[in-house]
Amino acid sequence: MVQFEKYRVDVDKNLDLLKADNSFFEYVGNRKIANLDQIIPPQDLIQLKNAIFAIDPGSRVSPASG
Image (cartoon, one colour):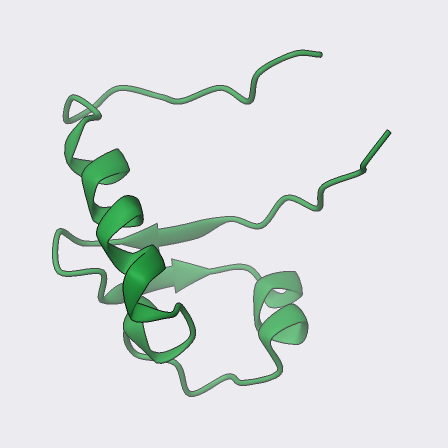
């Protein structure tokens, strides 16, 4: 079974980084990230934006239980 790490990252609709926990910055190895497009490949950014826009504002997303 694959174990995934969880990181708290808050972004706005433009994927500008608003807030992130220290473990996220340690994982990516860069504390000067301003936008997720700095660390996510362009082809994956489209999927990420689609997923974010599919979430209703104010709703919470819980990880799927397995």
